[in-house]
Image (cartoon, rainbow, N blue to C red; front, side, top):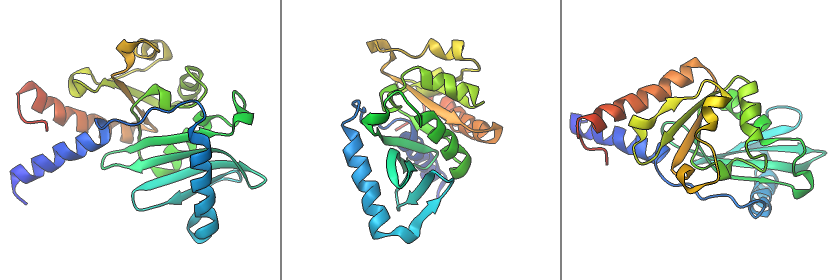
Length: 213
């Protein structure tokens, strides 16, 4: 492969992972859809279903991975993540309305996914997180996760780590000014450094007016 082809491929992988838009989640409209998809996979291909904990299972497809929390075989919370080149991307999350504002929380499922899958998670909108609102970030920080923030209009030059919840709160809100921010969850220092390397390469291109598309 030629050098220019490698550079283009790197730019393409970055764009697919960190810049493509993700559909925003409305409160519970996604719940029936993701519940039905997971139930179909469980019924049609149970051999590919992996038990992660007593209450959490995983199912892999070619391009996505599903995790869900269940009690007595009843699905309560489900997540679909796309297998992007440089991280997992949250695509859909749904929770049984009967459990709104009650455990199990999405933050608990994110914690398991980060540890089990071994990749960081990219969230393109706070609206795709869960029904927990800002409280989910408090739980993620309490669990010791690294939270990274960037503006999709200039990703490399706005990319930063928010070491505390107070730092992060500057980039979270319901007003229009926050809509361009995306977030990355990292489990450990290895994942953190890996994400940093992707954005550092992008910064070189942005600072030197090199191609980024």
